[in-house]
Image (tube, rainbow, N blue to C red; front, side, top):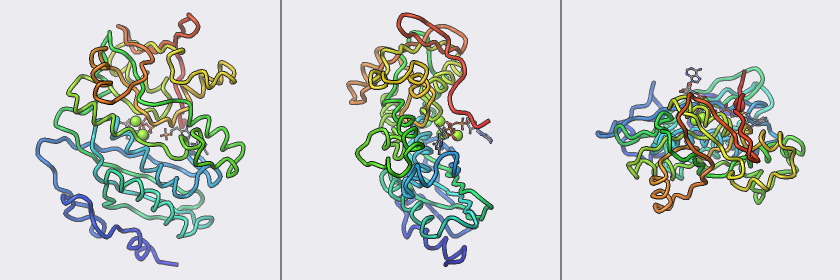
Length: 321
Ligand SMILES: Nc1ncnc2c1ncn2[C@@H]1O[C@H](COP(=O)(O)OP(=O)(O)OP(=O)(O)O)[C@@H](O)[C@H]1O
Ligand SMILES: Cc1ncc(C[n+]2csc(CCOP(=O)(O)O)c2C)c(N)n1
Ligand SMILES: [Mg+2]
Ligand SMILES: [Mg+2]
Ligand SMILES: [Mg+2]
């Protein structure tokens, strides 16, 4: 068993991908050099045992990968290039071994290599009962080009960059069947356990130079479109029949379909709005979109059009309180 400081050394990277790291792990704080012409983007999200994962719903590596992925997803939603991350971990006095925590770190490391991102600091503490992992990420976006929720305008189309409802479907099975449901080939299980942040889209949107509103889908498409509607002072209309692969969920009751697809959350694709002309240009840039509705003049409401009937989508998605 390593002591706290030996353990920190064991998870410290031996090198940095980015030469702008002046000092990473090993001093009172990390120092990184700013780059002229860019804005810094910062976000933090926390994952808590029994709230976001259990040992039955997630393999250890996947817990670490997802703890970083949900944060990179917020960078993607802002159009930023991921750069650095800082990890705070609270480890229960019993029930978790150092080897298991090491597996979680190796999951984070795996995803970090992809972008690449440098682990430049963190904090390690003990806690009475449940594991808590908090990841802070930073990225950069060209000055004044960050994608904001407040950019939607009447006449825009509403789009998704990926499928929704898959993660909720996977979670439902994982909560019922536990480890027996773990399957690298099952798209529902994979959507829940190993979401891929849509950085390629976020960057493509910024590089297009067009006006695009964006949000990542962590709490469900209903909630995220409400945030866009409110921030932009418009109404958003979702057309049920246009949702990707909506027929796949036809075996569920109408209420359950809407719960999984619109309020299930943890989809981690992007939802956004742009003019019809911009949407066509994005397709040409090899950024395929699912057009699922439109933006109208209004006051921050979200409408759902289903079977020719329109109703206001009240009550958002996942909330912690
Ligand atoms: N405890 C807090 N203290 C300060 N700011 C907070 C706190 N919790 C959330 N925020 C801020 O509120 C805003 C909304 O946070 P929220 O966590 O809903 O966004 P998100 O990370 O995109 O969603 P999710 O957590 O579902 O991935 C963000 O600007 C966030 O920084
Ligand atoms: C074991 C287990 N039970 C339930 C859930 C579902 N869940 C937890 S948090 C969240 C929304 C996003 O969280 P946040 O808003 O904190 O980003 C969802 C859909 C899960 N993932 N694991
Ligand atoms: Mg958050
Ligand atoms: Mg988030
Ligand atoms: Mg977000």
